[in-house]
View 1 (cartoon, rainbow, N blue to C red):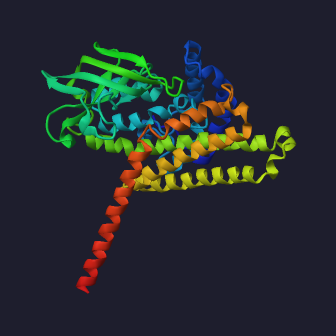
View 2: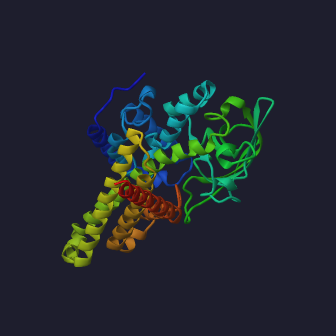
View 3: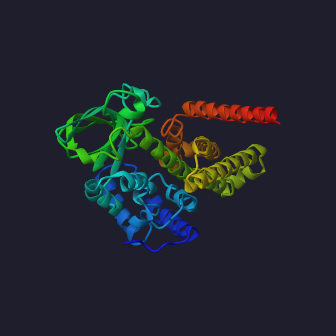
Length: 397
């Protein structure tokens, strides 16, 4: 069932060509989010599958083409070159493919994982809630209680990606009383279950980007629809974060690199030459700063991916790379718009959408302020431990 492995460089080239010739020319249609956009997305997905460009980093025993995260990074960057690429290439499902493959029961794999890997299902992850603090899991109020062999799920979730199209949602819910590291579970809820409701879409910065509010009103699912075992929610959340932040961050670099190219193309265009843009020091400074931001983020992501592949702790590396990638795409989009002028602000410009998406990256997948605080805490703890060890060695000597 495995696809033949392909080199990362060769796959990246094929993806770049597909994005530039098939997806980018259709972004205006895809941005509408209507029936025509959905039909086009399905058509592009099927064509991507036929071209061998779908599900590149799915588990190898489940049809993936790239074995290591380090090798996948340049591929993922090309998938993220368009806002719509990750959905079309199945990259949006990569994280759920790993979670269900490693932690799902036999029935979960049969009903949800198999169609997901084929591109016949859409997944979503329901964690954040309107009345809880996203960075503090102990404040979650959604309940999943086991009774007579069934999970009964009740609660609300919001800012949940892809929920309107999703076939199922992985719901993080409180399954017991007691310490948070023992009382949260991840339960798979099919979206056609009685009691599941998409309450409303939640546009971000004036544009709908697939975020929704959800209601679970006594939704019942079988006992084996829990991932791992009951009470493992915190541990599974940490596993999702380690891989998920890297995957999303490298996709943002695809948008950053595209913005950088748009900026450089304008500088060298006839209009750019007329304005002598290449001769202006502030223009050169923007080119340098954006290049440095993208290149630095790539290096940080590679460091995080190397540790991920080796099974080593990488929380600091992942969070720093996520922050750097957010900064890179924001700087790239902002500088490109500044060089383009009013045209860069227009709805027909890809920079308009990229700019709005870039701002959300500083909140979604871990808010900047929370990550910076966490990284600072870990670095100080590591320094203290190192200093304490050095003092102990001196005392022994």
